[in-house]
Length: 233
Image 1 (cartoon, rainbow, N blue to C red):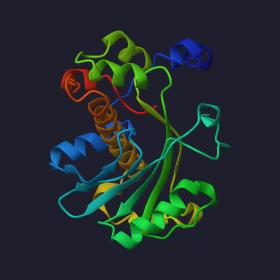
Image 2: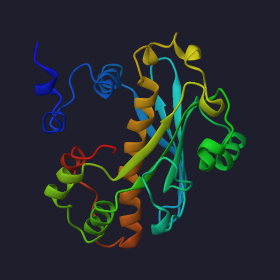
Image 3: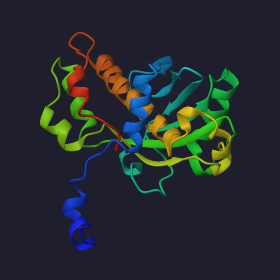
Image 4: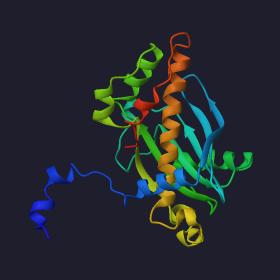
């Protein structure tokens, strides 16, 4: 066995890559194996990308929904510290398909995050901010009819980064014990990874939507091979 002084050096830890046991890779294999279908069921955003959206993730046994609220945020309010009180977007992973009343409830509670009050149907709570370095570059490139710079995609690796992913009963969200009999959530942190994966889907659609609205005549979508460089921070 290698000594801690060898394997725990920052330069080695910073070069670590996911393995087959990584939480997200376990989830992605299941999504592919079981042929889950992910699609937006609502995408009510203005030209600047503000509004709400809903994504349905349909598996062989159940459907889950990502409910998104995207709001204006001043630059001086954008911080990745956990004590922040405002974010570019807030998210809830919902058990099933939400009614309009549930969306209205979450439109009030989700932006409050830790200050909100949630229900057992609300599985996971999260929020995210845009990447100052990359989002505008990608948006402007697509609006101008060209693909973003690959080197910049690889350097940053995300359009939005989460500052927290809450579950397991926090703030009234669903207790872990209620989910243990669901095969899709049998492994550790699979519900948390599902919301992160769906947030990635939203961020890619979001930047394309804003770019298209910015210049509909010259806009081009991002190439699939370029999207592979982008995850969630």
